[in-house]
Image (cartoon, rainbow, N blue to C red):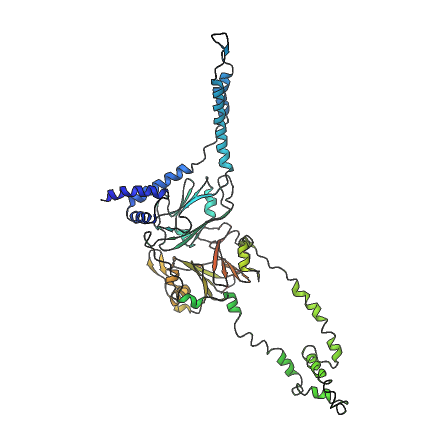
Length: 524
């Protein structure tokens, strides 16, 4: 019964390779593959054969004597043949010489064109399994096929994987021009279930002749729970998220408390008025009108004294107290022209490093973020990956940023004492109930339906810190693990693979291009 079922599945496997299966047939095939190792091996053999046929490695360069050898064996031998006399005395030359010369020229041209085509062909990703947005079985590795032989070390150095902790767990190998993630010659490691993956190959990846890829290649997909068709739906943040959805970035939320506006009206005016004579604050107009003209001009000149007291309080509050009103009014217009030109010529704030590649290389990012408000700086931070998102805590503000894979984010204030932190516990293979401050936020805010479980037992401490720069409508955050995160005030976020090689891809520490070494990391 098992062999008959496998025989029927071979037809589906062949159609699956050609992309001709219906959704029902594909689901049936995935169910069978989840239980049958023999058919999984057959599918791998078919895929390997397809890659070998489509993307054969380049042929070796012919020896320099080949052209001369072909010339001697074909053309030169027939250039001086013996003349043969025909039946009527005509001299005939055999036609083989012309055909042999044409064949030799074609052979040489084919070899030259093949080698030149391999060198001149710009490198590109010819295809991938899975494709963007596809639901992928957890038992099947990720495959990225290039159109020509690549420099393996260069591609690995420019490889980015999210969740970032998977970069060190999943083995990486090559099969011809295909990069295989999740399997090598010794083992095959299953992907995490019900997890959103992003795999990127940066533009700096080079082929064997040193030609760069030219542009970033990114694929995002989601894995099944066990087999295709039985994945759990992605829950949107329902109760916890709306309660925490931000109206402004945490930068603004902590910089704009409700108390500062209260002291602003009271500081300078009240002490200055109180420092003046205590009673004359209101009686001051009386001494101004009590001088000599006061008894005679009591009925008619009320309008005349009223402007004089109005000018006296202004003189007493803005400049130093001076008895003469007219000279005090004359200098007041003079400082205004000197102060007004100052804000008109602000010095532009630069956007450099990995932020520059994201900001200046994408007009949409510029429109969403607006102008930079301050220079980039470095803060102490930790990060933890989850099945459907991640958490980042910056210690300078004790704020936890929760980034969900559906494109929404929100901040949580870290108010938990260390003695109240939970301990991480493994609930499934390679999945944990998080501990520490992330675990406290995860439990109290009931984030398991939204984020899933943690994919690492401990938070990743960024040794060189997280790079941050604030903009009008949000901020950019550079993680040591190779991604730039754009957090907007409207509660949405995007991620971009950071250019520049990581100094140690397996550990995820930042290297050249991260520009984190020059700035000291403040202590929390």
